Image 1 (cartoon, rainbow, N blue to C red):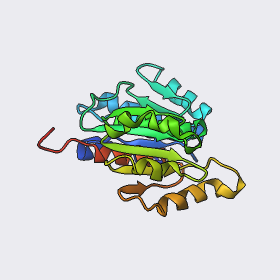
Image 2 (cartoon, rainbow, N blue to C red; image 1 turned 30 degrees about the vertical axis):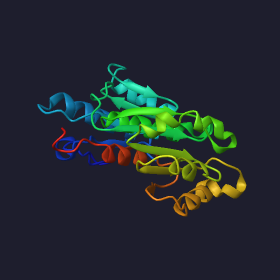
Image 3 (cartoon, helix red, strand yellow; image 1 turned 60 degrees about the vertical axis):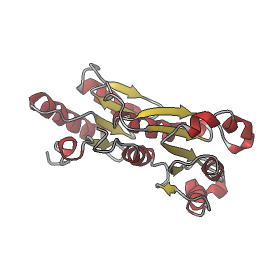
Length: 228
């Protein structure tokens, strides 16, 4: 291919499959990449893992569906994500809980949740529990405290991060989103708030990086070698 070098051996090398970031690619480039992946997977004697197509537009998702024939393909329009084959691996390791402050943060949160799921983790989603109504998050305290790692997705002031961090003992991955009004600066305010949090045990990924957060959480919750 003269447009991409696909990492067909990533699953064998790392245990995690390739992911294709569709944002910035043309529809035809996505088509060519999908066709190359399908051809290699069908010809290979070894599993390549489930390939993820992330940040895909409706047109790009339609092309992916066309290439794979809609057969054994999973598509989530909210997360703008497609996965082939559709079935995630059996869950192993610890539980990843993904929390989003508001429904506007849901696309990024769902991307994180699906990434962790397709990397083999048991995933729980908690939606729309921002600090404007603290009773909502307190009602899910049992779920939070049973998690092995928590991904918190929030925009605006990102106050949900230190609130949850003060209630749980597990590691947290914080994801700032570009949700918010003018002074949020497209997520920069949330990013700085998370980076300046006084709560220990919180790692921060880039703005709107649901895939990166889900991947990191999946690795944190991965089974130890002697448990595998």
